[in-house]
Length: 334
Image (cartoon, rainbow, N blue to C red; front, side):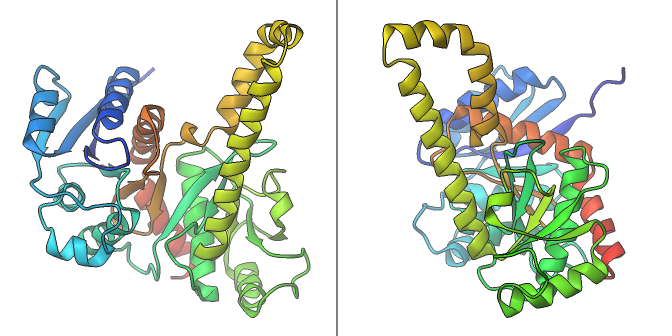
């Protein structure tokens, strides 16, 4: 067996609601799990320098500014050129890092990645792709927040980029690509959905037609495409429902002495169910379409999500995600 290639991910130490503690804890777990992973930890000197000491696969990169969660994204990126987000994206642009990950201001991360890394040639709009659990293998949903208003050609590109992600990260050889709609018939839905259906049917390899919201957890497709507003609502609904169900299972399994005994017997299966439904398993969503790897995490995430995000980032780099996105757009005729 050949050893995994070395991957370097720049990490925003100051991103998220619980930084830097959960970020540092997640980095430690990720490094332990992947001996070919290297981290460039970006942030204030008092945080990154002490953490990097004695850790041969961690490099401290000092950034003197931090973008707040409530700051205007573009304004912050342009005015805070030495923020941990800006510096991290610059490391990718300069080729010093293979990717960048942040739990911080998602708008600022998108803006910095687009401005500094640039777009893959032909990309009209970069899109955020989230991996969701289904009855079978996980599926990719995009866009989940980068573009509230879209045109049919944007959705067609999302389909091609999502298929590239499914192949390079999830290992799906021939992804089934679907359009999220309110019915299966081609004439259903908004004008955008109807026009996108025609375009995707003609140009997107693996297109299987429309799917409805109830089809997402059923595993009806490997890639599901929609605008960023609808996708964000669907994502948050599924994440909220997953956490709710996990909480209800836990309460039911500890409600009585009998249920606690049953829980002990069922623990291996319940742990598997928890891992399948937990959004932290994938850790972060990539911004597809930029000429570099940018991973965006939830601000409320914990250390497990950080470790998962770095694992996914390493897989994406080793799978040649950015190159595959470019190739998919070439097949689309972008």
